[in-house]
Structures are given as structure tokens and as C-alpha cells.
Amino acid sequence: MTDTNLPLRGLKVADFSRVVAGPYSTYLLARMGAEVIKIEGVHPMDHTREVGPYTDATMDRNRSGYFSAVNAGKKSVTLHLSDPVQSALALEIAVSCDVVVESFLAGGMERFGLSYESMSARNPSLVMVSCSGFGRTGPMASHSAYMNTIAAFVGLTSLNSNGGFPTPIGATFSDLVAGTSIAYAALLAVRRAKATSEGAHIDLSMAETSMALMGEPFMAHFAGEAELPAPKHAPRNVYRTQGDDKWIAISVRTDEQWAKLVNTMGNPAWADGELVANAGRVARRSEIDAHISEWTRNFDNFQLTERLQAAGVPAVPSSDPEDVVQNPHFRARGAMAPQDYALEPGRIIPNLPWHFAAHTELDASVPPPPQLGEHNEELLDGLPRASADLIAHLSALAREAARGPAGHGH
Image 1 (cartoon, rainbow, N blue to C red):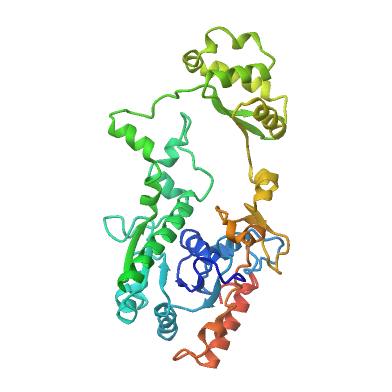
Image 2 (cartoon, rainbow, N blue to C red):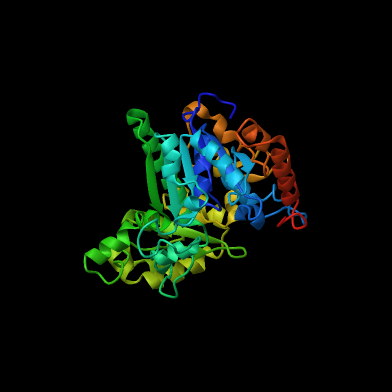
């Protein structure tokens, strides 16, 4: 980071996590000024380096878009934790940090000699967050989980069924929610450690972080209701517009908004009578949806949004990823921003979900991700048992593995 006044300046984090949840948490910390050291393997390497998307057929592991989005602003050191010498080097890095984040199944860090007990014996104020699908205790502690499996397990996909089969939500919701929770929990523990000199080991379950944000269906269950209550307002749905798979979301909550929507539609005869009152609209919401869909099919979703918003009707485009990336509102706020990365110039990715008035530079661009093993020499030089030959060997393996399929697996 070029700005030395960022809020987490001076915080040092060892990141042993992979895929999305843990890496997203440390990405947030890095963007706020923490020095984040990603301790990653070459074989196997972080899965997101291998899934792309890549911009060409070379499939260079340093150019994966997925990896870039959740690892920006970090440093990378490549260590094979099954090797006692290299796991000892990982331990040296970890105990020099304020925070350790890991996402192995229960017992994973212990297997490599990297337990919280061994670390805190040397750094009593160390904070460690262990993130897993279902936590480190309980009958499911050894179960693995990825992306939509967590959403399915906690009931989120059933809420997305719309009366049909449970449907995946199409995004890594549970991972990103868990990542935000990891960052928050880590900072709370760091605050406590600063005051008491006592570290903490935090057991964080991805399933439980998702459940914590799903209050409404659980409240319905506790109230004795078999399912979520019927909608209290209408119309409230997503309607098809012009173009290939383009939609608009309209949500009317008051009779006044309904009158404005009806006026914008040209006051059709079907919209009169008992539909003037919300109770009548709720009772006939399917019929209303059919009429509105017939009308919205004549318009571009962005242009219709502007027209409805100008009339005072709550409406937004139902966006696909291309719409979001190109959305001028998000671009203007820096919510989507170019990544400052020489290997992928011009790549646009999601930025931080908040904006600091004192740090507007954060809105302008996203820092680059680390290349595989890019900081091996910087981080290992001078550590016990880190010979020049070993550092050179690890860096050579990283360069070979990063080149794509031909170098993968060596």
C-alpha cells in the first residue's frame, strides 16, 4: 500500500487459507493496510489459481481472474507444509505475525506442526482464526464443503426455489459471508490482544455465518409457521424486458407507488377497481404479474428503470455480470475498478464494499495479486534453515508451476 495512514498499518497476517472464504477475509485486511503473507503450496496450489478465468490459452497461474479478485495486495511465499523444514519456516513466519488465518479441515494445521498451541507458546498474543465448513467440533467437523453445498445445507437454496426445486444461488455467497466474518472476528480479537496481551483461537463455521444472516425463515419456524408468510405487498417480482434474458425488478409497497406505476403504464383498464388497494393486489398478484410482464417486454431494462424511478416507482435492472461490470453507477463510485496489474492490464474486478472519505485512493484501483512465490526471497531470507539453495529451489518450482498445464503438478 502506498498510503501509510491506512487503518490497519502495522498489522501483520499469515494467510494459510485457500479458495474464497479465508482469502477474501485477508484481502479485506490487506486493502486496509495490513501486511498479508499468503503461505501457499505449489502442488497442490490454491484452487483458484487453477480455475481461471484466463484471458488466453496459456492458462498462466499468475493470471487467474478468480485468484486476483480475492488475493489482491498480498505477498506470496511457497512452502510445502508436509516437508518438516518448510513447515518450520512457515511456523517462523506465523509467529512473527499478529493474526493467522487458516481453512484446513479440523486437524490440518496440527498435522503440519502448526497448531495454535505451538504458535501461541512463542507468541502469546497471537490471534488465529480457523475457518471450516462446519467448525472444529461436532459430528460434522470432518466434513468438507464448498460454495453452494453450504447454502444448501443451511436452507438458503430452498428459499430460492420459487415453489419448485431448491435452486443454487449462483454465487459464492457463503464463502464471502464467512470471509467478512473472519476479518471482523480477527480484528475484535486483535483489539482484545492489544489490551490484555492474550491471544485467541477462533473457531468459525461457514454454515453458521450463513445461518446468522437468515433470520426471517427461522423466525417463521419458531412462530409455528410451516413456510414463510405470503407477500404483504404487490406487485413485487422480476419481469422480462427487451433483449436476451434481460429483466427488471419492481417492488411496489404503497398505493401511491401503484398509482404511479399504473400512470407510467398508460392507465390500463385492468389496473383499476379493487387493485387500487394493496389487499386487492396481493390477492391477485399472479394476474398482475402477467400484465406487467406483457408491458415490460416492450422496453430496455435500464431505460425502463430510469423512467420508473423518475416517476417514483422502486425499480432496478435485474443485472447479469456484464451489466454490473458496465454499470456507470458502480464505475463512478469505484465499486468496480481496474486492477493495477501488469500481467492483466485493464482487468475490471469488484472493489471494496465501503468507501473511506479519508482514503479515496482506494476507490480508484485494486492492487495486483502476488505472483506464485513472488516474495520467497524477501520473506525467507534470514530465517533459520532457509538456505539460499532452498529459496532458489522453491522459487524455481513456483515459476514452473505458474506457467500453466505444462508446469502444473511438478
